[in-house]
Length: 92
Length: 465
Image (cartoon, rainbow over all chains, first blue to last red; front, side):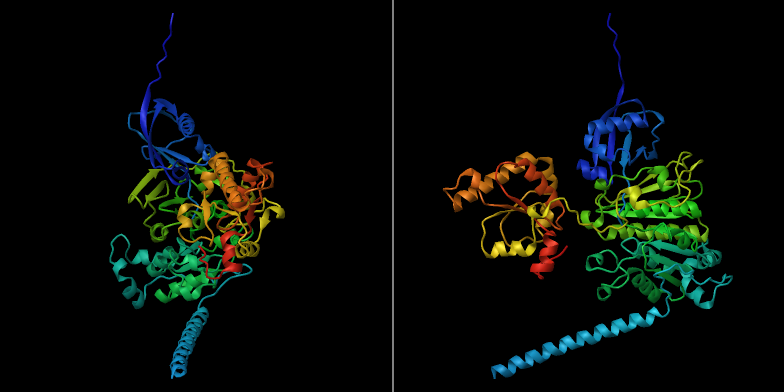
């Protein structure tokens, strides 16, 4: 007997700002992330896809469709949702 | 005849030098005369003179502020509130300059400016209130002077000191609204905590390269800096303007927005950014705005059971200095380093060597040493030390072949000399190279202090950036 487990994923748009943009070298990317996720899961998936971000993974804000994404929040991602990776800028 | 023409030229040259000197003295005199109107605070914390409450506008006020007075949202009451407000700007740089000039123009009652630093030539492309002839004078004083010329009715309090845990609360308590226009992580955490402890709104701006950010912290139930960023980034993940560069208009725009939000708060209109983060991308020409969380219950300074109940040591907390100046590191011992004069002698004596320049290509375009170099930018080098090392070894062997065809591999005496802008990256590169090339008989050296030292000690005409 086989058990099939389907994990529905959504293809989202990632937007990189400040240091994350500098590290990755571009502003935008597309990524498949399990649709039923939490902020923490999403961060984990992003860091898995871009291991260079590990350096600043604890020092950034995530937003989902221009709204702050708490790590504990349960979300159901839709296709083309926009997730922004926002480290602080300290220069001035 | 020839001699006469020459001496006339010399007279003209001498005269123009004297004219320039007289002009410079006139300017200095002007600055000193203006100083007498501004109370500069530099050593201990003196309380700025208390200001009397203003209840009416004068004829002069009505004339000066007429274009904002006729705004129904603002009106006479808004102007009176501005005149009774005190705003503190921390950082007299790229953000602080535009913020200060708009606050002064709008008629804020008192403007305090904190900065320990003096004006440098490389500040002037973005720090637009300083002037070429003020290079070397206090930045906070320079801002006060420029603002005074625009609006002498404002009370200016320049603080020529480093904001730290011992003085921050005493200074902040004299003001109603605080602007974070600083350039480093440690001072940002310090200001955040001080504003939470003193219960002041913090209008925070930042800028780097082509990007800017703006938020108002600790205001009407909105988050503080620590609610969003509880832990400081590791020091190696922080880029400052002197390293990363910045287009001057970017802090200009963010600093202007900081002034606008401060004016809205002071006049009672309220800020639009107490729970909102503005992300400005100058390359794309886009402004995005992200709705933020509210205050975090778990926040270590503004939460329900805070662990930070007084100011701490922020340089220790962040693991980095409270300035944006790059400090010199020392990872190599002296046997692996030469100074710029020694390198100059090598060039004079035509000592065969490989020069390795580890600066980014964009910096190599600005200036380079008078000797052909291999350019491997530091980040590319670190990402692929093995390949870089074998490229360098090949160059060393080729050069050795040319100069000493009979020498065996174990006696190659063509050193690799590594250089960068200030002598930090070059040391790290030398350290990596030495490990990679251990036992191969290749000598790897770093030039102490890099191109900055070259300019200071060998060639004063060499550009400094």
